[in-house]
Length: 352
Image (cartoon, rainbow, N blue to C red; front, top):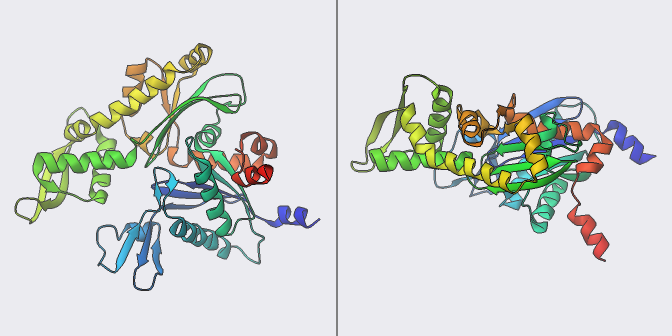
């Protein structure tokens, strides 16, 4: 009886815990959190000063007694304690906005394809410690495919390329499972590093991650322009040590990102090579779906289509596609049972 009451009053939650951004969906309310996966910590007191966008504004600007922590690396929790505090902060904020006392929620959370048992347990423990009643793990690419409204339960091939901040996942999905896949460490953060390296080698200019990110975003919006568009890049001159501004254009940004984009395209080709021919035929007909923040890089879909000879479509609002898919999973108990991967806690129970 109490279990049914919990189900009635609890607002179930879906969490897309990404290297760059954390998105949280609450049942019947939609996406309520869309923040950077970053935390500012005071080393003197051990207290968290800021989380999300507020902490993002402090990157590269902190005195020695403050530390900026990015607790996820390549989609995997690298700092258990900070991740727990970050999630607890977001979950507490959600429930402060609602009236009355709400029961602890059930949580669906995404994990990478190459997640290990130890990493699965770390994710479950973090979410339970942050206030969840029950945790269900779902592969990120499956959630993305569901968010994109692909018919993943059918016996047909669906190819999804999810370009995140720390990891790019390429998967062929059929009958609610992943048939062939590749996981690359070439993703959004690597593209930022490419721009930083380009500025250093070409102009002796040292720029920060935020400046590189802004250049990447600005260039991606203009990369299809007929004429190269000029962009301002500011940093520190490595020779004089003084502030310096350099004018670059979109052609130069494209040149800086060329190697990483080629690695992503090669990953897609490699995945197609290990995919059963029947599913390749379906993909050729249906096309490749691009999602994640990296999918917003204008012109990337055209490059992939040109090399693979397969149509490529970028999902609308690709940043929120995965968390929207998890929201749909929350609403369908049968689908949840079908796509949820075994819990590490269940494994512990069966081994006893």
